[in-house]
Structures are given as structure tokens and as C-alpha cells.
Image (cartoon, rainbow, N blue to C red):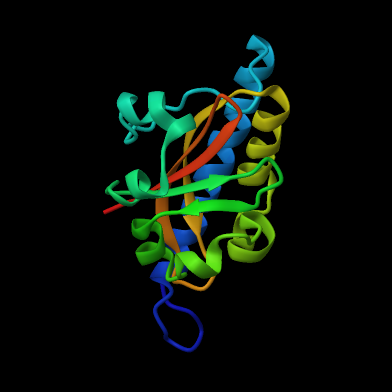
Length: 167
């Protein structure tokens, strides 16, 4: 795609298509979930990337264990404050873990997630005391649009955001 000045607009078209697909997926999940009484989203058709072993240990996962993962891992308090921020997420997002910890994920670190698609699912999952949803997302804050798969997980009152960058 080329704009009036002759400059290529391919990345914008990809971003728009990705965002439209994410919205369509989200609204479809809302319709399906409301008919089944599911809160916080349903399991997605997205391929899971967080192993069952990590999911089972999620409530007790340490910062050191999180650093050993090959994907981003962020533990959040119920209000969105970052408690653990692993090395892989630091590399992906370009934020030092020491600076990220104590910040609010949705309003300070990744304000592009402060919307119904992402933060809304998190809030609903915390309120229901259950969250296990996987969905595609595009990060746009402080970086070129980056396609990722998100896994929001709540186990025994502990919240995780797992981030797998699309290749």
C-alpha cells in the first residue's frame, strides 16, 4: 500500500488488519462466553505456549524460575502492579526489570494494554478469581507494532501475564 506521497504503508495495513482480527476474536469470545457463563474469556484457538508444569507451579514461581523461561513472564498484583518481570520480557520490551517492578503494568509500563481487550479481561479474571485465557495482541508502546500471543493466568490468587513474541 502506498500513500499520497508515494511512501509504503504496508506496516500500517498489517497493524490495522491485526487489530481488526483481535477485535473480532474478542467480541466472538464475549458472545460465546456470555452464553456459557464464562468470565474472563474462554480458552482460545491460539496454541498454548506455557507448559502445564509452569501453569501448575504458577502460584509459587520465583523470579529466578521466571528468568529461565523462553518467553516473557510478568507477575501482577490484583491492581496491576508488577511484582516479577523476567529477563526475556525485559529483552522483548526494552525495560529493565528493576525499573519495571513496582510500576503499574496497564498505566505506566504498557499503556497500550489499558483497554477492554487486555486490561478488561484481567479485571474480570481477578474479580472472578479465575483467569486462563490465551489471545493474540499487538504491542504498540515504545516499539514498532509487535505481534504477540498473551496468556493471562490466575492460580491461587497469583496473576501472570505470559508473552510469546510471534516469529
